[in-house]
Length: 130
Image (cartoon, rainbow, N blue to C red; front, side):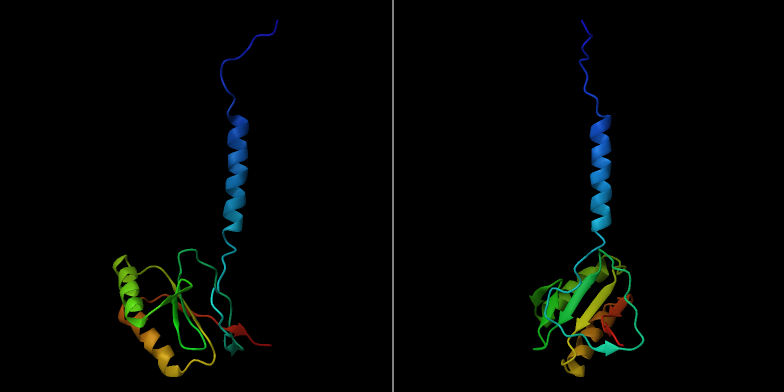
């Protein structure tokens, strides 16, 4: 009669978990960039930055409404959120998506808030030109 083992072999379980972890890490880089309907301006000399998972995403749509991480927000609340990011060290990059029909004044207003909190890592999303 064969001898029975009273312990569980966990090596196959660990192998499966490592494969699942690798799959999650590879697919985590495919982050959705735009949650709002924004027609980005076209730029001839642009490049797509590496997607950063901890990036702060701010958007301004065609009606000049503000969005924080894809959710609507008021200007005063945006100021408070940026203050919170700055208090945490300000190392998180800020990605700004602005509809091409938004007035320059609204754009400057938001950039001024970002710079006012000394958040230096800022990028502006555009469409690559032909």
